[in-house]
Image (cartoon, rainbow, N blue to C red; front, side, top):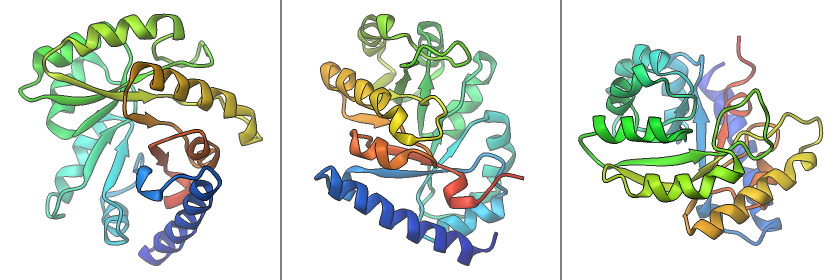
Length: 223
């Protein structure tokens, strides 16, 4: 995909974000677009950067480690979000690569990050709202106690919650998941809500997302 194709996609996404924000009586400034660059080469990431994107999300630490050093020339450097599962043996590398971690999914991992960090790390707690056995994240029942415990760790800055909604043909089917996460986020008094991907981001915005994670909608189908 050429830079012009990415720009065309981005223009369309921007219009859709604006429309969703109007529906929800929200400002577009409340929504951060994260370009999910999983399997996307450094050249195409650079093209997306030239199109104005400044937030990028990666699923795998090892993949990010192989390509982001090639993009050190981008200034200012993009904000890099880890949105995939973080293995304990990748914590040190992740802390060197990423600015924020969306996928904190256990107390053990929180304690490990706290121990390894030499700065305060912004994190989001991943929540398995729908209780899917195939996905990680805190259960709804365990979330509040976990949030209280993690907030006490000096090197972690708990910024909000993240979820991956169940796959559905109709985005309206996952609206209750997004709404429930927003209500929990509000009850915890946290600012950020990372939810919504290429197939359901408009519904997520209408339900309060402050960060949306789009890959296919920006870069096209993965190859």
